[in-house]
Length: 486
Image 1: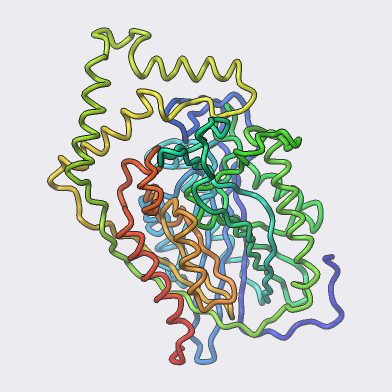
Image 2: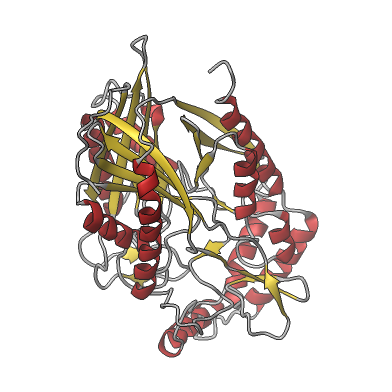
């Protein structure tokens, strides 16, 4: 694997460049991803930014372009993407900056990626350097694709006999009925090569966020650090990995029904990220031989960008009354002294600390505690009472076609069913869905999830009407790329 072929490929006008930058902060930092603050004690694995720049030179001298940037952070923020484009405006004049898009792996073991912060400046510098270097590194290239299955993520919402559901719910309860939704074990791969058929990088698209370490007290790029390590051992350190999280809003890397009885590694700590790294590596091994036999420089490349407007979720009168009742009830029991151990917040924190000492596995916090209910219900009340709340949310949709493969982005924690609705109707033989891209849109649940309630079904900015528009707009934009006019 990795030796040059005697028969060099013919240049088909495709140019690909790769670059990676380390964006790990120094010293203790606040880790983002839970209601409560976690200060890092050490670095378990480095945080990185990886950029893949693509350009197809056309016969008429024009070109199609794309720069994909994957980051080991929890979200992509529109402000960060805008700042990247603004900084690069005079530096890369031959790149259409609108063809750059960022996506996040959703690790909960990195600082919040806001621009106006110490970490934000590190991240912004890293992204810009990665984009500049990837663009400079463009060389004649080829691609091939592959697909396989592996169990990486599991649905994390538990249904009970009374019709309610909870994220990370207790499956040992006598009224446990079912796991609420599906999983997506498919892994899409796109391999990039030079003209000597030497591997230069792999896009890896997995329907699972990188949140094994979501409650730990160390900096970590989660299971992607293990994937990078395995790929470097197998192919060399010059081969890059571009991580992508597919539609996985209701997915996490844990099986809530087996509960480790069969000996699965701890999916809340390092053993879990090592195991998932092995599983993804096995997929790459399985697919590599066939992918290396269908390398092509004959490339169809399209990349379209559109602003999509979808309706925000309307809070009904009944939802408002119920939320307000919860808020008023919990606040009525609040002690006058905010430092009292009996406040909802302090009881929430104490439960976490107690669970961290006594429980073998997470979650250590409870979204069904008083504070767990208070926080989202306050948001629902605010949404209802805010007379200036926008009726629509606008986001930037990127759609690409690479030969018979499609790619489409969204900014949400998009529930799996929406992903299936897009991939099933796509004209692409494979469809790479990339969530956490371009902005942070929050959870986008289905009606089944809203019916079940619980965390991830409450206080959502976008509801099922918005989800329907997202699916229709994405499918239409993908399939237009297979129109005869292209």
